[in-house]
Image 1: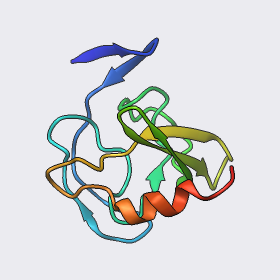
Image 2: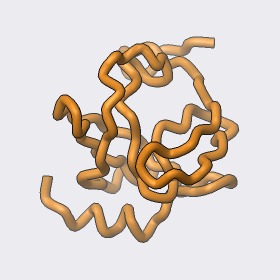
Image 3: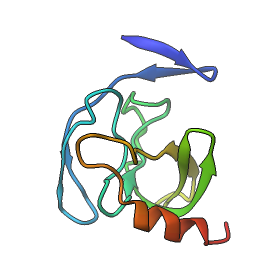
Image 4: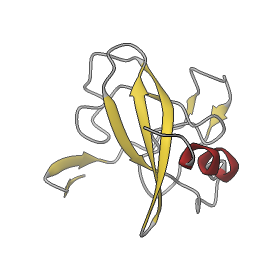
Amino acid sequence: MEQPLSGKRFTKNDGGFLCKNCGKEVLPLGYSSRNHCPFCLYSLHVDLSPGDRLNPCGGLMEPIAAEPDARGYVLLHRCLKCGEIRRNKAATEAKVQPDDIRKIILLTARPH
């Protein structure tokens, strides 16, 4: 079911996947769309709007920074193919495979 999210359309797409960067198996979150690997924090540039999987780019997205916000952390990813930068909410409180908080904290020290 699609729901509006900050003026964009959100499509829940919570399937598991194998990370294209580190090769680890990533399990579904169970409550939202998981869009990055909890182990290495890399993502894929596959969405135009969250969860739609309609972006033809498909490039690997490197985590370049993290910012604290009122609900946790936001990760900044840069596509290694096209250069686009996207913001993604970290899943540090996930019950299954939470994001690596140590890597997130290291990313908060990086200038972006």
